[in-house]
Image (cartoon, rainbow, N blue to C red):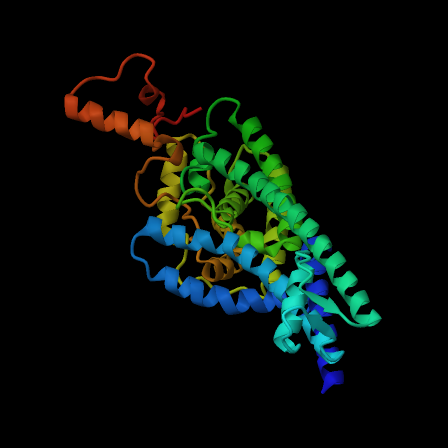
Length: 394
């Protein structure tokens, strides 16, 4: 029994250390079906998402989803610490609980767990003392491991939130360029001004790099995929899908725009989407509804023609567009279902204000103006709101 207890303790310690190393330090995708981190997310995300999905209010529902990412990080660290404390307590128990209690109580497994906890978190109370040399060596080893664990946690949070912040900056910048949620039509329409082709090429080059950074950071730290954006109609998945839609449309059937950068961005963005779906073991699935049925393509065609964007409607271009959509939409759909993040439409469902137009101060001023009947003063921020119907948005 003592031998089994010691082996079980070693397994607990080794499993927790290996899982923490693969999750935090190893700069590549971690493998293994029985990793602690994988089991944690598999067992907690499904019930959390099922409960959150039942909330009727969209903002409250998105808030419930947004809690999961940061909370999962905290509980994952607790799980690692618990595994290490439990592992050392089992090893103490295997050595016969060799401790002298200052209160005169007999040493039990509960005493071993107490000693392991106070040692790991370096409390050093001194109320229970080891009686042999091997136990002292284990205590020194555990206390050093506890200090290293604290340092690991301190270094872990800035790396994660730095990667999250870099991801969200580009998503926020996309808001005024492609709408909220972002759509391929709005991105092309708002770059139909003179010189817009060069601006769009530069934007796609930036998003090629963004997709590469997304792939590198989120494969190393998959839990970042659960972190939600600041607004309910924004997400890294919808932004990535909108960029893929735009590149597919540019390559398949838009005249006058250089297609080379669109091809490069499409390749990198699809690579990131496919790799992330594989991290979560999510195979591609067929969308339940067509995101671009013929009637939506007709609306897309009319809107782009109004903005003087030349779109081909020949069978060859339609077939190319369908083929390119087939390369990524299945992966986007499976990630959308798993993470409960909506995919963006190709054309906005109805006219609405972008996030940058709906900040609280502007809304309050608009409500005050409509109540008093007063016109906004010259230089008021409300005058800066640009019409979505004007093709020269920028």
